[in-house]
View 1 (tube, one colour):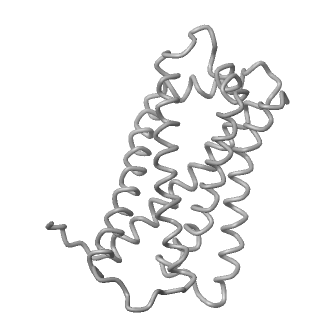
View 2: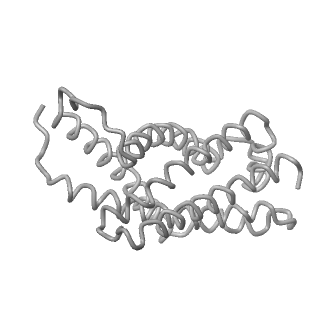
Length: 214
């Protein structure tokens, strides 16, 4: 199999930059979802969804976001394949380093995220296209969905997977960009844990809040 030769460092840097962009988007997405918990009959959340669904600038951004996501996935898989091909017989001794373990975990959490996001995107676009109950607005559809036990549990498990992926990815991003060193390494790891925790708790708070009727 002939794979185009692009330096692995270049691919890693691009993956890191794309990951940073997606991490920022997740903060925006989680903040918007908190509108579901407002006791305003869904006014804020419905207005936000209507704006996101009708504004042409947002539509362009959606294409950019989808392209970023697909490119991030594609490059990550490409890196995994090229790294595997570079050592077809494997190492003589298994590596137990922290970086190796974290990277290996990233592959599996990434695969789980791909599957979950595919289902989530299908759900989102089915709602957007009006393929669900047309008598319910975005706010009502979201609250109805999160009140179903198995759906709520699946989303919470998904957020745990996202947390693990972001936790390692945050520090790996700084390391790839050459911003990780012995002086600031620990602080970067702590900030990464906090950032991932805050975002995932914001997402989880909406599911838990709706499920318990808050």
